[in-house]
Structure formats: C-alpha cells, structure tokens
Length: 369
Image 1 (cartoon, rainbow, N blue to C red):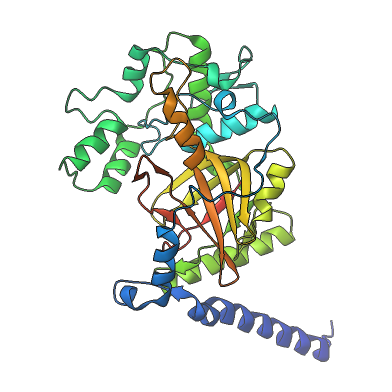
Image 2: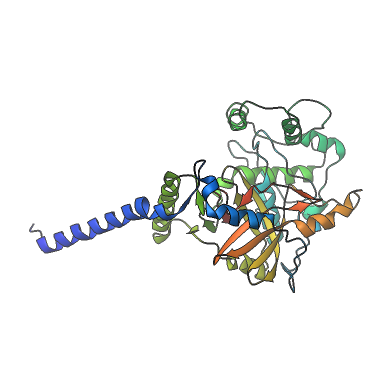
C-alpha cells in the first residue's frame, strides 16, 4: 500500500502543532495566573483588594426588588434541624441536605432507593408533608448530635467545642481518614422512632455519600493557586473536560470566570440552585432560592444553609430567624471587570465562617448543580 507522503507530512505537522499548543497551554500560559504562597503572600497586590472586599458589610445594602423562586417557602421547604456529621460522613451532610431540599421541592426526588453495598437506601412513599414539618424529639436530637455534658468526641458540636477549648487532635485530616477507613459503617438511624423522619435522614445520608456520582452543571476554576503545579493540575482537568464534552461524555462545563446569570437564570426559572463552595481545603453546600441586585456591580444570592437552619415556630429562639434569613447570602461583586464572591454570613456580630469561603482563597472552586 503506497503512502501519500504529502498527506503524511501534513498529519505530522498538524499533530506536532497540537502537541506544542497543549504543552504551551499546560506549562507556559499558567505562569500568568495568580500564585500565592508563604514567600510572596504579603507582597501580592490582590491581598489588599481581597481584604477590602471581605471587610465590607452588605447586610444593610438593599436593591429595588428581591427575585425569589415562586412558591418556595424557606420555613416550609428546608429542614428545621441542623446539619450533622457521622462516621459515614464525618465532615457533615450539607450536600445531602441541600440536594434533598432541592429535588423534593421540584418533585424530582426518587421516591424509593434500594440499599447499596455500603449505604442504606430510603423510602419516600409516605413522605408528603413539607420538609420543614419533619422534626425530632429531644432524645433523638441528643442521639444524633450528642449532648455537650461530657468529654466524648461523638458529635461534631462537641468536637468543635473541645477543639476551641484547647483540645487538639494530632491531625484532623488523619482523624477523618482514620474514621472513614476503620469505622466506616452503614447508618440506618434505627433509634429514630418516627419512621417518616427516619426515611428523611436516610435520604440525606444516601445523597451525601453518593455526591461523587452527581455531577455539577458548571465548575468554576480557582482564580488563585498555591503553586504552578496546582495550576497545571486544573488546566489538565479543564482540557480533559473539554475533550469529554466534545464527545458528549461529560455534562459538566468548566469555566474560568463566574457568570452570575448562570445563577440568577435558574432562580428566574423557579428552580432552587444547589451551590458547592470551597475554601481550598474544605467545602460546603448551600441552596440558593432568591437574589437581589444592590447595583450593577453587587449581587446578593440568598441561601438556605444546613448549618444555620431556621427554628420552628414552637422554638423560643424563633426571633432569630429574621436575622438568619436577612444575613445568609453569597455576595458577588464585580471587581476589575471580574465577578468575585464571598460567603460570609454575619449574624449577631459574628462571622459564622470567618472568611473561609471566597474566590480569593488559594485553590477555591465553585460549583453549580
């Protein structure tokens, strides 16, 4: 078989050009990205920009109107009990909370799910009330969260309490790994008396564990990196994602810059939006249900946060709901013609997350589901 040398040469030339472009994309272009480390942290100009943004208080900034998902009632359509950790998910179940709230409101949640190898399924056949109506009695609450009257580290609250009271585990990441490897267990919430409540908890746990199988619609790349190698890692991911999208093997779109219309558009279409935010070392999931433009350059997206649930009407602390509602939002601000964000609820003169979640954190990403 005779080979056409001219065609063969063009194939070689085209392939070489593609390889060179990929190498430039991965190894040369990233050098222009913002890299922050211990050596240059204080010298970076953007630090001042970040600090100014983080120090701003938007609680009293108001726009003309708040656009909400129609018929979404945060008191009724979100859980009235707080996020909890378990040995199956030691960092909490925030994704499971937000996912069940979103899908249940839309009527898209699977009504029953069989047990998997390592996870109990759930049965929503009899679940027909608003999610805010599902509650636990005090014994059940103590059983899940633990009480603060002893030194046993069997609940997230006690862990945090003792941690800030000078209790120092050797390595919290190692502790999490230790729990996951040696104490992995299928949780069935068998101590919960109300069977409907038990099924709700099983669903939350199920989707938390299955989070890795639920792909985001959009993945926003970090704006700031710890090292050039971290940039290259994300660039490989970006390139691989585009190739998979070309062959329709992946529905997640990777983007470098935030487009707030990706968020407001979903709310305009009356769909709550599940958002996952990263601090670079940890992550949290929240549910957006309304937005408000303060002006052309500042947008507030109001969210339900499983770490900050609204108290039910019978609670003595019902008065604090107004403060939670009014101050639990993500702020997007256009700075130097790019949208930056921060999630930093300021309630009762306290930053709940102490500036952890924002686009200026090294390696912080942002996802939309």
